Length: 352
Image (cartoon, rainbow, N blue to C red; front, top):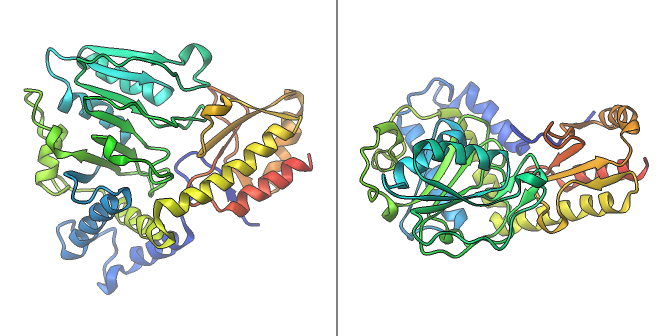
């Protein structure tokens, strides 16, 4: 039976990425060696790293605009610390928008490091919407936001224009929609949603913002050192970087972000229309802030849960349960999930 993978992450990847990755594990570039055993300093892997870094900037429209891309380890969670270490002055202030669990985790790291202002929060409403109408202090060293909230199913549709660096955690919607990415000075994203397997983190940095906070930064946390070393300051996560390159190539061949955005919009519209139509269900997030990546919804009568769960599992649908913070269900529709899989879920919901 074909499986329809709605896992929130690690998540579905394109079939051709699985096939090419499998071949590379057996014999990478006809070298007689596995991608898992080659030197990260070998010509073959240096080429992989260089191509991946360049393709990131190409897809985001940031070529020649003073940006550098890095593939680091430690997940987005390490970036929660690296961002203030590199941008927050010792007597300065950081401004954060609190929109969910991962935004809150980023705030916690910044608070342990220096003066941190929460400009707005939707925590009291269990993060079911994106705050609006907030003011960012003009004297902040930077503003941090999270573009998409995997757990609660909300997504920022607009971003402020500010006279300070803007940092965005795009872990769960990177490469999924067109934005003016030049508005952001740092973008970071764990690979395991729209880019590759868990194990590497993409960081895109406008180089001119670095080296201005006067801190002595530990080498492993210093973006400038990673840039100087061409994302090879220490041994990189070789296989996740290679699989990420394959996914980026797949996206480019598909037509880039503009093409995948049309598909993602169609998937989200199809599913949300059925959630709103069907009297058995209700959406968990504010309609205007609904995520195109993670659709959260609830049963109106939890007495039907056991029957419902048994039936969607029998239909080959995987990864549908919601996070414990929200309950109900979460359909994660990342780039590689085909429209056909969403149609299977919607057809099944209609028959319930």
